[in-house]
Length: 589
Image (cartoon, rainbow, N blue to C red; front, side):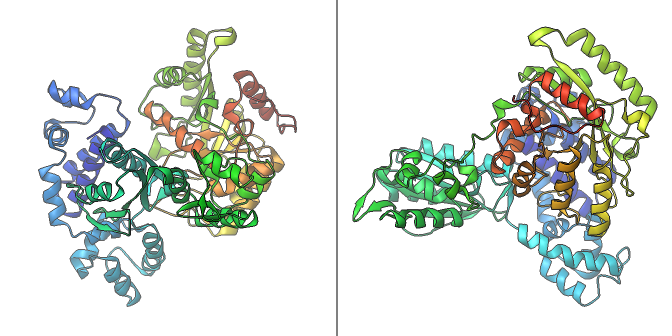
């Protein structure tokens, strides 16, 4: 198991322990250790072999023993004991916004509620409102949250789903009956969450490859045939792994078919029909003969189209654009020159300013923006004005000592993630805001405001000349909570008017701004930085997930602020500080 997988188990041990009423100090210790492992770059196996797991912050002897067991055998006796004690349905209840472990425990202890179905029946009967610590408002929120949980059931966020896909892909590619294999479906289109892992394999003996897949052991799920050359495996948490095996000459067509959304495939089929061809799951044919497809580019060329990258295959005008040569060169991770939304130990980050700077420079970047939380975010160590001045002295000193000069110059920018208060004000007075190189404004409170009030709140912030960019603009947490009610189009329009950028928050739990709105923002001339919301050096790698969203939003590199070179960024930020909006002629990276 890797560090992230171990952290997930520790986090679940903490959650299950709280549900079963275990010692709260022990529960918090496991939760803290999970957070440590999420941000660590340490070699856990090496630490375990050396008996030094307790050198990790928050890892005592008992937790070290659990980690060592997970690393050695891939499971934990304590974890399995707790899972056996807690009904499976309680896991679903915990995903309902507003229901924490204490309330779930009350539901189970007082009413025996251990499933979504029982919870819905009790809520509709008014029984939930009568429980201690609930009330009518909570009961209504429960009913509203049931739909969200059901809609996201069986889905995984992109990183976890991709990790699973790579595991099965490696198995397929290593099997002697398989000549080639690729990931397809939602994951190849870089969707933010996926309901299934879809794989396509080429084999001279497809039946043998399917039989081997069906015989897999240790997956904890149920395998079944899904038609000729197809198999499906449903894992314990509801995620489905689908495999289609075809003869090698049909592999390219099968990958393309399994990748595209239904709308994209329909558009290709219509295009094929216009040209006297037939396109379906078996490939592209002219009359009764197969059209040879050495690669996917050949498929699109045969239809008179420019190549459409997998991320764009959503049925949102990409086929018409490909016919007219309007598919852009999409931004790539290598285009990034830095990023802006990062936290350090000054607020709730795990790394120092210097550590974050060196990690950014080690990635080949030219700049990094430090944007710790503002004073109202007491829960996250928000900085009072006096601490802002102290942090700025540290950043200035680091730049002077380590920034260098000339073409190799590297710069730390002084930023803040300022709370957008309920009245739309930014969290610091104007003189403090003026001391920053840039300001990220984010909503962190009062999520329940009506749409009109929330929209007005954010619009007031966007109109503030001190605001440089809007952070995670809808507040969503994927598979955990929906965003707050807000008129996204109105916010984007206002950002265009005032020259405010809107970030893609690349934390894979957020990916907010949603890629469906990214394209509109770019069309309105809004700059869209890809920001990792990093709380550790490892968190800087979140930008890869944000680039996925940028590509799905049709963004070319110049539309992404942090693809610009250092001097261009400096000029842009200076212009914003003077209250100016960017002109039509923007610098290219």
